[in-house]
Image (cartoon, rainbow, N blue to C red; front, side):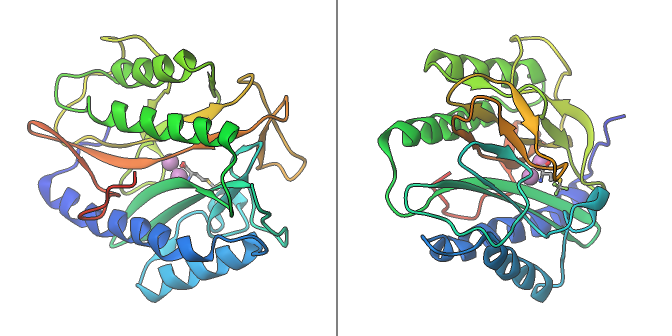
Length: 254
Ligand code: MF3
Ligand code: CO
Ligand code: CO
């Protein structure tokens, strides 16, 4: 069942969502060659806790850390570790915060050191697909419009869309209905209504869409070992459009 948020709920959710966005802003200067993902995890954890919030991933279904960090061929749910980031890596940091009874969820890619041309095209395409999907959000639109837009952009550039993970309703729970698929057909699926709040979080692969889960039981990686990219925002359906709750005022980079 889709939980419709009141205007007051959305007002509270703004705070949690904005905090998650601020974590991504805070961490950016630390995402450099040589840093371990454990260090990034610790910095994010401390920032979240010092703002009176809880990092939602910690102990979520047994997840051992406060953020997800997914490098290169890792698609999502990578576990921070002592691994050092290297020049030319790409890494997704996925931040979810729980504040005043509501979750906010956002993630983005970072280039570690210099960006490689081949992989930056993938990353920028993923970012664009999320942005174009967000722009369609309004009452009367359908979830299929979101999926179709992402799928068309990705496949049009020769990339594939991960099927096994999707966006999700979000609110008092980390993951709520509906599932927000990143593939689909225009006009199909759930019709959007004011007060729905959900994430859109496309995962695009350089090669085939197939994935496997590592023995750590969390990290999803591409079967073919090629790169994967993901961006994520928490979006609210308003009377006549949308609001990206995880976008800070004046934020223009994604
Ligand atoms: N933040 C992820 C999402 O976008 C979920 C992470 S679940 C965890 O839905 F347990 F791995 F943290
Ligand atoms: Co997330
Ligand atoms: Co999410």
